[in-house]
Image (spheres, rainbow, N blue to C red):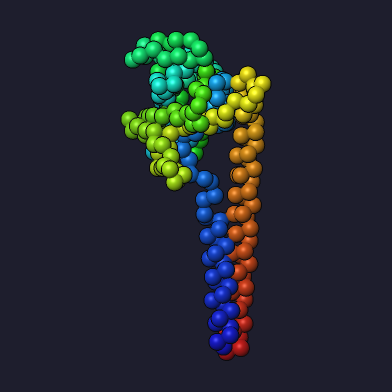
Length: 244
């Protein structure tokens, strides 16, 4: 009798574990990021700000990126996106800066994408905002691009925190580009992610689809294990009652 009880308990645990696998989220933590994120110092970068909607009760309607002024960008171009108005704002620098051998007195300060009426990033959705910038600073291995995400209910999330010396990701990390030193013979126009981000969209979507399929397979496997364990448990209980 005790053996039957042990078997029933074991199978019940397996069933619960299987159901838990089905109900466990498999997606990584979501935050605003740059995709792709590796480029060459002194060159140009074409990439996308990937913006997921993290709220269940509101959609995202505005994205504002703050550009560096200590290493100013002299070129900013946005890719048209249906339903969104893009605006890149220039301003005078506090003091002139030399970029690629030229003295710069003004540079781009912000890039803002604002949704048109009736348009937003909905719950469980994300959007990619493509941009081309340059010239990337030299002698700097990371270019942070603090970004504010505004929801339709007025909430603003400021993605502006730097990664600490220990490498641990903060709660609201700023999107950042990793900048590799320029190699001999490299003019900064190729390699290290300088392929247009628009062409890499299929790769990102394929990766997301693959992750979704994996999650479904794991969920299906968990359900199967749970059902199998539950079936064995019920069978064991019936057999033990018959013997009794």
